[in-house]
Each structure stands twice: as C-alpha cells, then as structure tokens.
Image 1 (tube, chains in turn green, brown):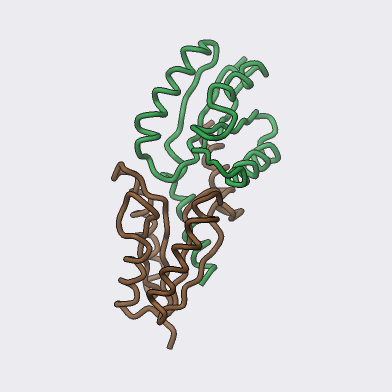
Image 2 (image 1 turned 120 degrees about the horizontal axis):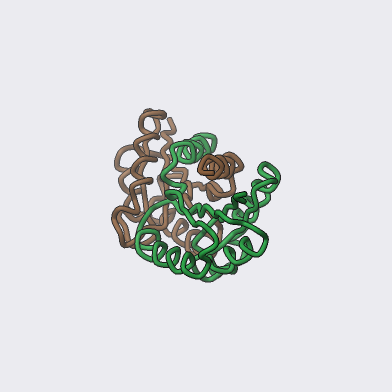
Length: 122
Length: 122
C-alpha cells in the first residue's frame, strides 16, 4: 500500500517570525487532510531541511512524498538549486517516491486570492 | 477627489522568469479593477523600485497608494527594510498618502488556496 505525504517547502529566513504563515499552513493541512502526513521544509536559514523532512516522513511510513514549493516565482532557487536537492534526496531515500508541483505562485487561485486581498484593502 | 492606486511589492530575483507571477497579478488586477491603477515594485534585483513605482503613480494622478507586500512571511525585509523604504518614499512624495497592508501570507484565503493547490497534486 502506498502512503502519501506532503512537504510544504519554503525559502527560509533569519527572522524566526518569518515562518508563521508556514506553521499556519501545516496546521491547516493537518486539520483538513488528517490522513495525509505533512512536514514543512526550508531551502536555507531554517530547519528542517528537505532531507530532514523526507527522513521524518520515511520513518513515519511514507512511500510517496509530494514536495510543494511555497514560492511565488520560479527563479534560480527553484530552477537550479531545488532539482539538485530533490535528486540528492531521492538518492538517499530510494524507498520513497519523490515528486514535485510547480511553485504555488503558478496557481491561478492563489493569485486570485492575492488580488482579492489587495482589493479589500482599498 | 482622491485617486487610489495599488503597488504589488515583491522581493525580486536575478532570474527574470521569477517575475512571471507578478506580471500575471498586474494583468489580473487591470482586468478586474480597471479603475484602480496598479504598478509592480521590487525590493531588490528587479525594476521598478518602490520609489519608481510611486513616482509613476503620482505622475499619473494618484493621491493615495496602498502598498501590498507580496511576501509569505514577515521577516527582516518587511519588518526592517520595508518601513524605512516606505518612510523615505513618503518624504519624497508628500502629495501621495502611502499606506500598507500585512504581507499576503497573513491572509487566510491565500493560505487556503495554497492548501487546496497542494491537495489537488495528490
């Protein structure tokens, strides 16, 4: 049986308060999709790393992990650093099938929510 | 008469393709709120700067500009750099009333759209 899990993958920042929306995302996920394990992971400056998050999910029984890049744009981090990192993780955890989605900023509904947020501020 | 306008303010990146979602946001805004002028602006690495965007809106007749930070987390950039930058712009354009919103990552609907995007990928 396949056990799917999700990693919400963000950039990371020096200021720990930066991660608050990511913690909220994990809380929302757990409330709405309790059967699908979720971990946060960060490219730099924050813990856990992508490797650590995948390790946790593997230990907890995940056999498939979808990594969702919580980034607006697809620049050097996602086009260059991220594929290398994902490939390295796949080598380290051959028992977990890793896949990824486009950045959340590619999603029309996410962009529409941003537009609506701005419009409410007028 | 007050003429309101919006600046969608992002971080910026070296890779020009990073800005694609921001260009889509501006296009969506113009289609849905054609009476409210919109400009993109970037903290670093991309043009225009916040000052340049406000200058354009001022030249075009705006008297109030709401700056929407298109960031997920509120870390050092938004807590430290941004208020200084906004204050400097306010001094340079005393005829424009500047205000700001929280980061879009503080908005529940934006977070929900991210959750739904991830769930669709499973």
